[in-house]
Image (cartoon, rainbow, N blue to C red; front, top):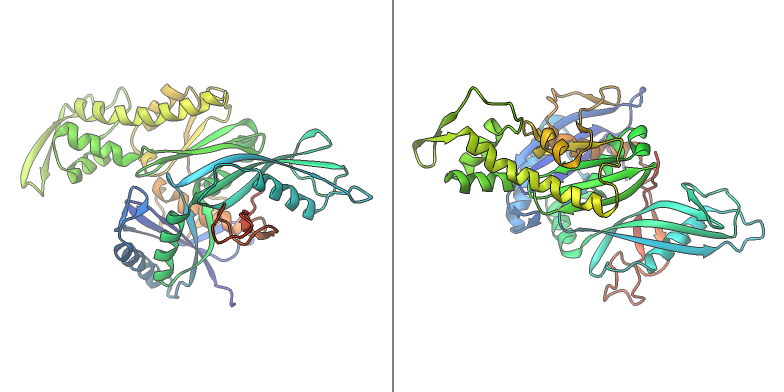
Length: 424
């Protein structure tokens, strides 16, 4: 198969489809070169799932056509980012005996211990595994080993984080992409790529949570000691703020969305010079007046809920206020003014909004730093930096990535599993 002169990443959301095109290799300074960024309104997607196959396919085709007109070449394959409430996370453990006379641990031993962790995993029924992440290894009860190949020992153990997605979710999105004429070259849990690529080595060592405030859900991933400590998804996103404003202000969703983008501000000392705003509602063909205090009060309650969810999850793990690297905010919802102030009040952590390092990524188009594009850019960049790490390996047992798939006579979790190492 001829190699494409570019790499394409696609992020399909409930609100919009985003597409990033990068050169197929890093430049001489190891920079990722982004050639084009495209965003179009998505159709046929609601609450993160496909609700109308033809509408979703048509919206994706329009996005691809626009991208092709920019680069002047056909797009044949792409990396697909997976996120949302259909994603699940399972911790598991594996153990094998190294029976070779010299007891040297090989790649095949690592594959075996990961396979063992898969066979012992619970709660992955009717799901497809997209990543098996070795968090750390132990050799003869010596824990904290990140890369055991080449070391000597008779007993190898692994702690893994298994990322899986509901089968129907994955197959429906895959069908949309295939009907648009695109071959899926890789499927990646988006916050995994974003966290690995965006966070510095120091942040991964110290302990940092990356929070992705999306349209219908919010994802988070925690790194500590250069390992992925945990990850999760909560069912609240920036669209819930829009819905709250529509109800609280008694206006349309369209007007509420504009108010959210233009006037919501969570800084406690903001907008003191403005008491009210007047906006023309094109749908109702009338001018509407809204109190700024009510706008911020209604919207703040929902953004607080997002961070209270996350704080609760951190508290369960004993990590609340115990992450020196703080919290890094990405996603479209992180663009709201003052969102970092709310996060700081609730999480009691240092809060940062991510900005791309221009020493790492070079933008050919005029990129204005819109945080809504960070994930799709990170998908493309991560794919380039980790092309070898993301090579799939064959798990010996079974022929499907679906746990207890009726078509898998072994009832196994085999198939092509994406192996992601917890180090750069």
